Length: 263
Image (cartoon, rainbow, N blue to C red; front, top):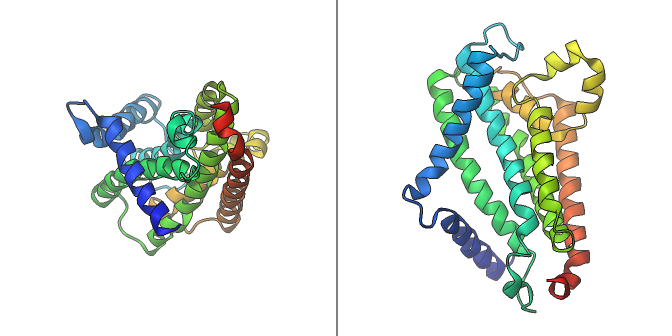
């Protein structure tokens, strides 16, 4: 990214973050409160009421299961917030889009930067909980950045693709809302891959194509179960994420000349 474009990216990223909390009494505290509230609700429902567990290691405790939900939801929120915001990235900035000299491709990157910051706050909260209630530090924890990066590539590709598509298909927001709910329950957030494979091989034959499921599973493996990531799952997540990033950018670049006319 050129220095000028980087400055634009940073400026618009900060503006996006500030606009989300403008006029709010708690302001940036919502970046802490929102993930904690979401975590508390899902932990109570799936952990306490339904007595959920992952069943991967015998030493799993309710605290480990709760941390697993928090980490899994953090990864899911990265994709979910991308799906929620990406369709309106271009249509909500008509004045900028119509400027010939403005690098429109930076706008999806700004939205992604804002999401990345909010997800990073959730990740820090998880790490604090991990140090307090987790199984202890282990060399396998070092795998976490490599496991999580494919989600960034996936979200970047989705941002470019949905931002471009949202210009021509205004109903895309309703579609992505339904898709987000589908991803929530098909990404092994509240259950483990092992449980699906054991109880329903047929369902697993479908769910195994979900790249987020593999990232979620491997992130719990390296942090909570002290196991290395599965090589096939990690490779699949990387290939899928990079492919979506490339296809998303190509789609954005192909449709970009028509943005100003449609808006």
